[in-house]
Image (cartoon, rainbow, N blue to C red; front, side, top):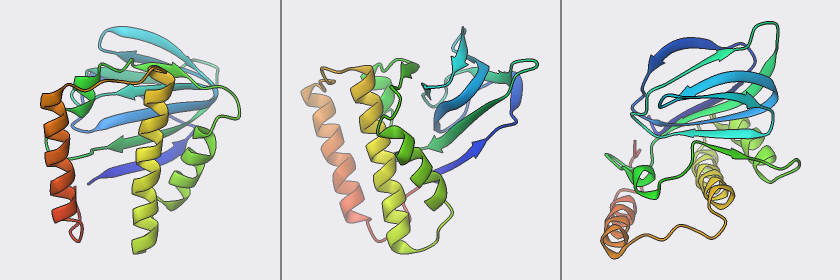
Length: 168
């Protein structure tokens, strides 16, 4: 599928694994441990993690602590390595009251909706979240060379051509 998401408070998966989709983990309360590509983070409230598809990672709750997070698994386009081309950091800090808080909340409420308008809204929120992550990670923006620009055009043409289908 295109994506899945939820808000969770109990969470442990200490084994290293990789996943076929990209992931976002946004810690909203407390802290936990996240290891991404060999680097271990003590993930605290207000920290947002991006794990590109295929990246080895593990995660677990710290002993005697509680935490809360939003999580998302998502693809953009079939076989897209868009994020590998951008070299985004695995973690950004999110200021309090930043726009991503209500975006994650709204996304998690709409993710299981079956209505056409709601599904479009979910996809648009995902794009907003990706744009916000990029802004927080690279405030000056990310340049994409001409070759990648043509590739993005091809991706957008595919979406336009298949807009009536369920694109996974």
